[in-house]
Length: 486
Ligand SMILES: Cc1cc2nc3c(=O)[nH]c(=O)nc-3n(C[C@H](O)[C@H](O)[C@H](O)COP(=O)(O)OP(=O)(O)OC[C@H]3O[C@@H](n4cnc5c(N)ncnc54)[C@H](O)[C@@H]3O)c2cc1C
Image 1 (tube, rainbow, N blue to C red):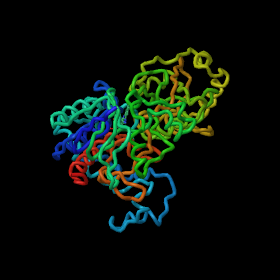
Image 2 (tube, protein in one colour; image 1 turned 90 degrees about the vertical axis):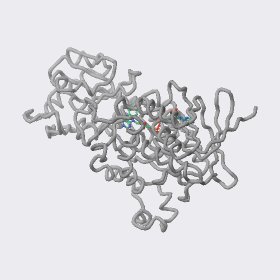
Image 3 (cartoon, rainbow, N blue to C red; image 1 turned 90 degrees about the horizontal axis):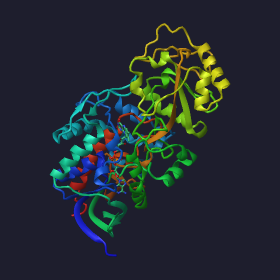
Image 4 (cartoon, protein in one colour; image 1 turned 180 degrees about the vertical axis):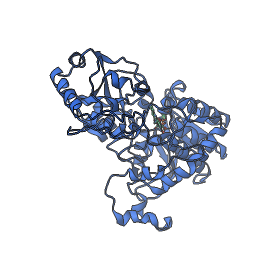
């Protein structure tokens, strides 16, 4: 079978926020651009299509307070100071070890903070609108904005802008490998379409998302935990990790924690995108044995839900139940944090509820009685902020909003850890160049979005779309103007 070859200046892999911003930006800089996506046109956009796309911004002009520190402080290892101290020296004098180091790159984070507002203004120029919109979180630790119409508006509006700029879209076209010139520079991709194999030549921007849609890679990096998670929305199923594999094959360095993914608490019974359950700070979480295992309320729910979800995943079959009474359910706006389309399991008594959710009734009754006995005087309860109403003498404690669960009928929802995106990815420079293991830019290869590594322990919420857009735009510009391949 012959391979059709198409010539472009820039080839973008992936039609989510990172790919679309890269394509628009490259085209604006005069490049002939192709965008390939393995999905059909009706399903293009991966995760971006399904997200509300909250952005960690204070206003359109300013990123949220503390953005840079939160991202940099997320690194949880013990880096070698003899290497990391080079952050302070002139970039020209940094060693290969520093440039390829597996660490949050402060230059990358600074570039994100500097370029995010301009990126949103640029997207506004292409027809996007942004506003402060309601979140599902009862308590929050930061400020957020979002595109009106969510991620779908990004796919549709930036997709329209790209077409207007002359970008050629190739759907049902799956990038499989990189084409590499004799000098080691990346010169295109080889891809599969329903009609056969094609080669698209040009400098390459990889924006194909994480590997959450690939069971083999999930098991390789996450072991047994891979079995008790699944993508939070069907768009993640398209992200099967070829971008990562292709770049690793040409020697790319990595960043981000390959043993973790961004975990969100969702109802495993639901097929809706992001059927999230964020109401657990106002109830108790119990495992299959009917026992509590975690402090349900360590702080604002937006800052803590990921860590709590990891604790849920560590339970038998990776599932827990949140149990609420009528007092908890009456917390203003609580239902906004219950996004499943499946009904609660109810019981007039705790014993009845236990029978319906399949946990031992005597243990559940004992667990709730011990919790109730440890709750303080409820005066001072404040659902709007961590209120310090903490249990005493209970292990594990509940640090806020600890009020007795006595007022039936009772309700319960199951919760599992959904995989929003994988943390491990490619290391890129602040100019979105893919960096190799000797800290050099791989000629002709750029990457942006979920595919690039940044997070290590706890996802800095509402930064994935923001950095996808920011570095997508940078990658497109750099790929169009680098002149590595003329
Ligand atoms: C329900 C939900 C809620 C979320 N909420 C937020 C939020 O509020 N704020 C936030 O910042 N983030 C949020 N996220 C995460 C965020 O949406 C994603 O991380 C981000 O949109 C990823 O953008 P991307 O362009 O890197 O990848 P994607 O949008 O996933 O796009 C990747 C594209 O690459 C294509 N592709 C994959 N492999 C190949 C291949 N080999 N060849 C060709 N094409 C390929 C896919 O089909 C897809 O179109 C959420 C995600 C979901 C699903």
